[in-house]
Length: 192
Image 1 (cartoon, one colour):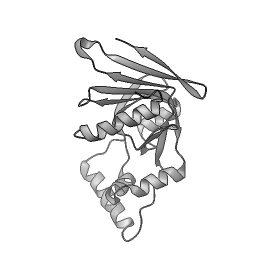
Image 2 (cartoon, rainbow, N blue to C red; image 1 turned 30 degrees about the vertical axis):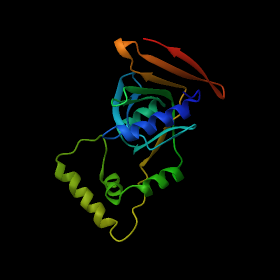
Image 3 (tube, rainbow, N blue to C red; image 1 turned 180 degrees about the horizontal axis):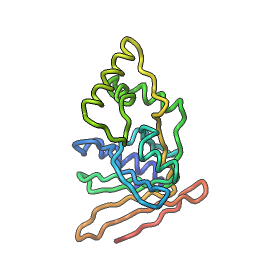
Image 4 (cartoon, rainbow, N blue to C red; image 1 turned 120 degrees about the vertical axis):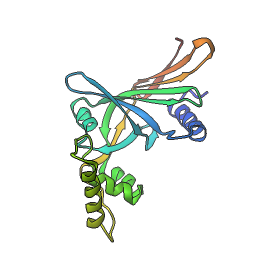
């Protein structure tokens, strides 16, 4: 196996793209409020490499508020079909407007309209209210491109630690942990 955590992640992720029946790019995102209360939810990985792991969301959402207050996060990929997990921890930064624009342009038109219609993490009186907002956005942008909403964009988790977990018989699991050491990585092998 590779001693470069990004190469190893790319290999495992490539295998998961083939073996997982649904959403191989699904990852749990853990954040924390300013008062220390943790929070976790599923998001989708939309980019990865040596600079970090990228996801997109409404920047007025609960998760965005938590990231503004405490700009650190943890990610967890669980690929049950492979009996593997990857844990990532580190600081979080917003991706550039250009990168957010490029990803937004790649989304389906319906998903673009949904980003305009959604007040993510805020209560609504009825589902019909959301559907009416969506139809209003469809009418607003009819016949033209849908620009990225100013409140929508990407975040990058810049890893300070990456752990690769392998399920083994008799719960004798194997964990390879990479921790950032300046410009490089230090690797440790851990067992249960």
